[in-house]
Amino acid sequence: MPAPDLVFEYVLPRATDPCPDDNGRRSIADGVAAAVSLPSAAPRTAICSSRAGFPANVVSVGLWVDDEGESDEQLQEALFAAGRLVAPKTAALFFGITLIQQKASEAWSMQPKRLDRSYGFVRLNEDINVAIGGDSIVTTFSGSRKFRFLPNIPFTARIREQLSVNVPGSIPPLAWTTTRSTSPDTTIYGILVSLISPFFGALTFWKGNDVAASLSGLPRRNGAGGELAAQWPAVVLTPAASQNPPGKMVFLWQQPDGDSGSPIVDAGVLTAGAWLPQLRHAVALIDGPVETTVQLPTNSASPSYRLIAQDLRGALAIQWSIDGVPAGRAATQEVELSMPGPDAGTVSRRIAVEVRDEDGLTFSTPERTVSLRVIPPPDGSPY
Image 1 (cartoon, rainbow, N blue to C red):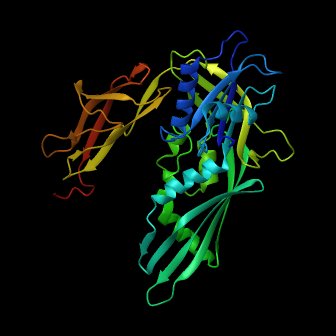
Image 2: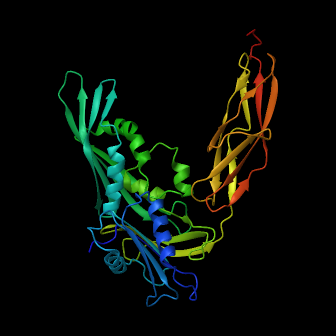
Image 3: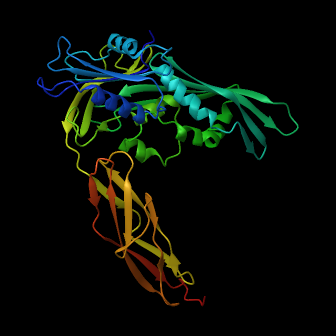
């Protein structure tokens, strides 16, 4: 039977907590699969049982890249045999190298393979490889560089990322140190990184996490190991009405047992530690400039504002308002600010946003005043 490519396990909060029923376990497995962005048909299962050494029942979730046609009962047996949780720890998460490779290959397939430059072009090969090398995850890709009127120059690029576990409670929970190299030409790496940054941005290992969202707009210079570490979950939101687990699980990941202290094991990445049940408290913030300044003859601007939501799960229903009038429903909202007339001065508008998640939790921000300041030219010259 194939071992699961992802294993997530946790101990229920109290000894009296019953195991989730079939629908509850299916919902938990579906939630983990959605967080990892696996297709709806991807094999998964969840089990719950009492285990020696633990004070309460243990829930285990397994995901597979390929279940080799095994039945659900056989997958449950394989999941039980692959359990990663050891008392007295109460939570464990294992991400197997096969799943890491699959996620990298999916993202790489969307990467354009011909990258034009002023001197010619870079052609990337179709495959990308992710492997474990000691205490590191190594991402390798290759291709050739073509100068005009010269033969192709082949290259191989490697991104080696050494992973470690941060102090429990840190965000992100994992740290990584990156070593990059290309052969035979070491000067090409910087060019490659600038060209394939969109590929790194497309690597999603665990979504729905505030850390991953905060990194989404940054240029990606990591390989698969660094992206996985950056997205390793510190918090998992669960349905607000759920009792097992409750609305939010906060993880205190620790270094795994063993001398190396590295979360990298023979077949993937593993963290174990404790988890704390917490209630969810919806919060929404508006990110954007309080004041925008322009210089005459310009007398208008359309600054953009972004919704930042915390403890809100799933698809969000968003409603912006400008001066009390309903506006857009997207995560960002442009606000038109225009000074009536040709003179310098200041004009203001009021913006707010209300957001509701798929569990019905809502939050409305207080109205925020945003302003446009129109200033004359510095030298007083006509315009």
